[in-house]
Length: 284
Ligand SMILES: Cc1cc2nc3c(=O)[nH]c(=O)nc-3n(C[C@H](O)[C@H](O)[C@H](O)COP(=O)(O)OP(=O)(O)OC[C@H]3O[C@@H](n4cnc5c(N)ncnc54)[C@H](O)[C@@H]3O)c2cc1C
Image (cartoon, rainbow, N blue to C red):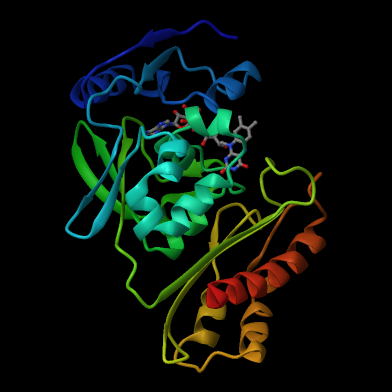
């Protein structure tokens, strides 16, 4: 591995100052589960690593004005186990429980996962289905982006040098919201998905009032299935309608062929798993 200098700030101001000072030569590091692997493979050569692990206030889960606030430094496992998340945002608890192994989930952080922007990751579709927002900070100030606008391309977000994710804010799901995250895993239980689908349907008296559907592993970024949402919105839900909605999904996919399946197979599975995720949400 290329030599680097490790900085361990204890305040956000200090961390942002270090990132600003070293510019392109610096990268934040949180759990290190992705970044260290990349550095070992010589895919990144930061001369300065700014460790976010000791930054006060960056880790933790709170509720405020009905919204869930998850600090960027919070390990996956704490989201999965948190009683408030399990009760009010069960889709997130279920989704984080599907990530890799407990050992990885104890170390990998919420912010590190989002900034890594691997399109195969599990949490982003569920965050998009729940209309989550991402808080970002730099020396210049703070800004907020919708989760679905964060991702730009394979392993690329709209984060600028010197910016860090500080928090994810998730509105409280309304009582009529039905949710599900379905992950297709033909290899091992701790693998990344071949296809993953998160759905959130607002169903009132059998009619779909609103729908948000997002998929991972089927393109350079997580994608939102807007055409499928349009098919469902305003309609009485029945099995034919769910099939019709799912049938619109392959057209928005652009997967790569790899060891998890051919591109064509993944597109077909995206349709099948969207229908099943819709069925599961309605059965819950
Ligand atoms: C073997 C293995 C299997 C895995 N399987 C899955 C899986 O099935 N599903 C899944 O969803 N995930 C899976 N993961 C986890 C995932 O892919 C990432 O490794 C993890 O989420 C990264 O989190 P981290 O805190 O370790 O980030 P780090 O490795 O510390 O950082 C990752 C990137 O984010 C940047 N960064 C870190 N924190 C911040 C921040 N707050 N603001 C801005 N930038 C930041 C870093 O500079 C780096 O570019 C797996 C990981 C491993 C090692």
